[in-house]
Length: 324
Image (cartoon, rainbow, N blue to C red; front, side, top):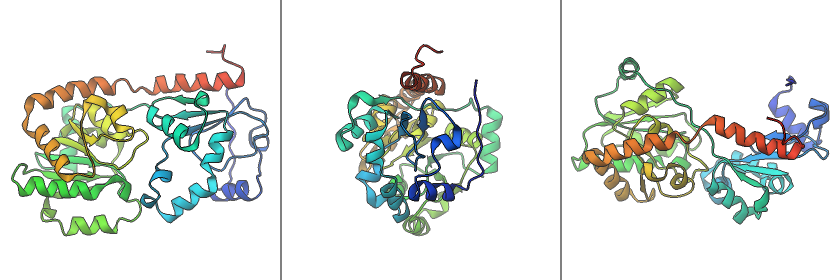
């Protein structure tokens, strides 16, 4: 039996009360519970001995603070992730990479960390959907695609430089399509787009709905994801699920999650990115091999599996491991 408790407390007011007053408590909010699940770092209500399960997505804020805004850095300082991780009864890390990072960086005991991959949700894109999306966004016949929040951590400047080199050398004549919302510190990126020698062939789509996103993956020549750091990395897997060849970094969790389904590159090296993209665009055999490997790999990531593994963690702490 499930019960839903809804409280009309503004998020900022609740966070301020939890931070300053340590109130309200979990019992005030929900009554008796077996365990408390926090799907990310946040200010937590007084748990009073209730087991805490915390999902850790990555420690990028610790390793690369310069890639985050002052507001985000302050948030992570106030939330005190190191303390919460140590006090939690169990941690769910979204990748083995993140699990090892928690152990090595914050010295969290390995026995309380559970590496549980996230799932990937996509749908099969019909020919009609492909045509409709191409018309809706006025897309050319050929384009490279990237999707991410526009912020320094996503390394979009290197992507723009790689596209410049591909066009300058005559190795590619298609467009560059960038989707995703603006994050912080976008001025450098916006200036780089405005002054780009091939600006007329760079399309900025902004936010795109999930269904349109799948169609964009499906019709792109190649998907590029050059983020400096990822705890999991959804977009490369979403692209692979659509059979689209992917160029992604060989570092952080991307090598673990995407594995042999992508061409892995040094995201700090423009030449490396250009060479990998050329291979995918030119070598039909390699492209088809990666297409098949990528589809098979993406099918490993199921939200059903994620939910079942997460439930086992809950049950082990609440004493209800015998329940289905």
